[in-house]
Amino acid sequence: MAAPPEPRDADAPPARERAAVRLRLVGTAALAGSLVSAVVLAATLVAGDFAGSVETTFALGSLAFGFGLLGWSGAVALGRGIESMQTHLDTGTGWTERDARRAMARILGFGLGVMLGATAVGSAVSVVAAVA
Image (cartoon, rainbow, N blue to C red; front, top):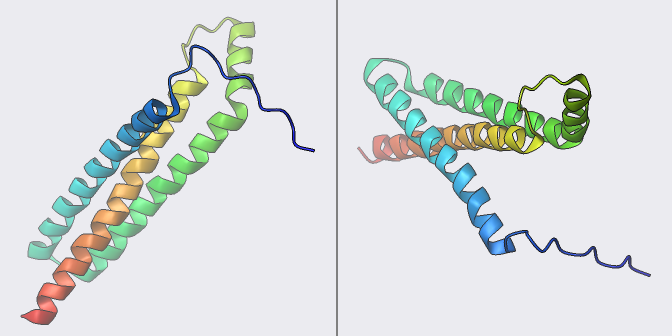
């Protein structure tokens, strides 16, 4: 027997609107990461070892992605406890679980963008080099 569905919060925005906000949050960070990796790889194409820089750029992107993912899951798991502790200790820092999740989602999206940008630029340069 399935559990009864939880009642919806009357003040919560529709699911489509929430999804659009989350997609915009991660998407803008991913776009920024893609642009940063493209600029870095374009500079190394002119100045140095391109294959090594693609690998390094991808590795740094995956590091940012992993940090964002770990931070996001930590904020989800421990956020309410940290908020309660800060309320109890009267620290007044203004830290919230929601803000921590948003920040980590941006870092995660940036790392994802760097990885995608490194892959796209590296593949494009390889195809052009093979054709030429």
